[in-house]
Image 1 (cartoon, rainbow, N blue to C red):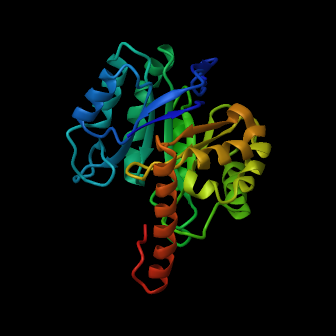
Image 2: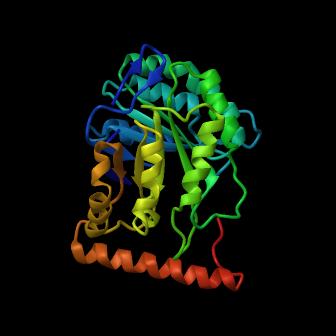
Length: 296
């Protein structure tokens, strides 16, 4: 799944911090978790950023590229080596799915960061660190404080911290003041409540559109930080009308908002997808009350 996004400037600051890409547009390859998908992405000259997921293997000894399986034909080390060997500048976003993957994978990321920084490539280390819409009572698979601590203790230059909320399926829930205050408290106790050019907050488009204003205080409190509005792999492409609604309401934030979203090519198709998603989420709320809804 590929999507275009106004992006977030490259390089490192005095060798200490990576900054988001300078280009205003990125084209993403998502769930690039196999050798075949990685080869295809690196061979596509239009792809400028690659997202992939990280799990621990079945033995718990290696960090592998996978969204939920305990086996893969691609390790994290091989993934990073291949991205560095590509003649083009390709940025990467590493989505850690569990704490064991963080402990196994962060030292590997750290060992590659100098080479990424020298070649002008950015590395995002991403995790869902707080409960969010549709997942209020679900246990977190990544410990927020340990994730930040390992990223800062092991990694120089520091990669771009991408700190998100775990989301599920809900027709009513949305990002709230509580979500913002919880993130601010996490940043405060980790010494990150200050102007920053290497923190991003990924937020799900299907929830952002319900209450865009709820997230703006986060940008006010963390000058330099950015929002990355996303749609998930396999999620129906949303309408251009819905994207424009988000963009209009976040226009004051300028380039501090990026979009990694799949947008429907036709107006009718996009509106049909929006209706289908909204209906599914609403029905899931009813099913959940009956004990049959999808839980994440």
